[in-house]
Amino acid sequence: MKFATKAIHAGIEPDPSTGAIMTPIFQTSTYVQTAPGENKGYEYARSQNPTRSVLEAALAAIENGKYGLCFGSGVAATDAVIKLLEPGDEVITGNDLYGGTYRLFNKVFAKFGIKFIYVDTTDVRKIEAAISSNTKLIWLETPTNPLMNMTDIAAVTAMAKPKKILVCVDNTFASPYLQNPLNLGADIVMHSSTKYLGGHSDVIQGALVMNDTGLREQLYFIQKSCGAVPGPMDCFLVLRGIKTLPVRMKQHCENGAIIAGWLAQHPKVARVYWPGFDDSKNFEIAKKQMTGFGGMISFELKDDSIEAATKVLSSTNLFSLAESLGGVESLINHPASMTHASIPKEERMKNGLRDSLIRLSVGIEDAGDLIADLAQAIG
Ligand SMILES: Cc1ncc(COP(=O)(O)O)c(C=O)c1O
Image 1 (cartoon, rainbow, N blue to C red):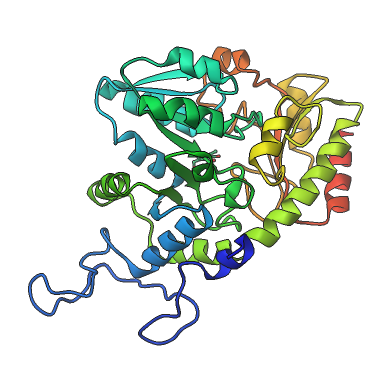
Image 2: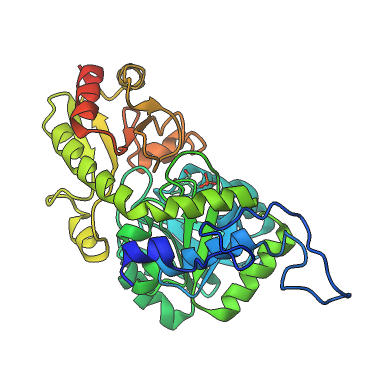
């Protein structure tokens, strides 16, 4: 099946009890057993729920993996992966990461004796140089939030595999429509399903997809033991979102290209971060591992001040000032004070995340209307 067909059909059967074409929302906490231990495969909804099982199968299909697992948020999915590790283990990760991932690593897990080493993952040699005998996991985010940096997934997995180091890729920005890390050798793909998978800014959810049965068993054990599972209504919403992922992503990509090009020639804009520019350092990797360049764009103003950025951020009408991304509606965000505020300023500046940096999640509205909105806001 091609992607658009899989998005609608894969993992989904009409409900066996009624024939309902849409997967029912099994709003139940438990399941009646005919005798102790005799059941229909469902015992208690933290461990299994039929709406969630269908979503997990659909996620596996669109990421070209064998197994999917859903969590109560993207951060809960990340949390489950780190719980595979033990005190003393080391994780190598990027220095340009979603702020909540950085916070989880440094403020929650570091105190349990897991060591996080931040390097520029766009350079595979820097990852290799940071490896020690304790390295158990390489955590990649590509493209990164918010600087759109790209890591060559196939090069990292080829280097890590012989050393038996797991590679997990946060694929939230690309979505499975644009990039499939398992095809490039990754062991686990992570998603904030809150974003493009859900697509309508009405759900918080996370997902992991993998091929290895042993890894699936360990992560399923963590899912049911720690209990960060999503409710059935939220699973239904993400299932419905996935059905339109291909058509939405086509429009996000088309609008992203138009707006990135327009911003790049604007006299008040200093720099635009979007992987589709052929002079960008990310272009060759993006072309190799993604099927399009997406609708996430960041840009800096020539007046690199919080005040100048605030003026733009408070003047848009169609772009709503909000955290999050990947919904049908366009959003505008100020990483320094919003999504990445948990990263200390000196650390943020060192990694190129400047005061005037503005991040756009370009929606699927008319591109001309979106440009008119940005034009009046930038002035
Ligand atoms: C790249 C990335 N990864 C992970 C997350 C965390 O996901 P959630 O907010 O669903 O917990 C986010 C949220 O913005 C994100 O942008």
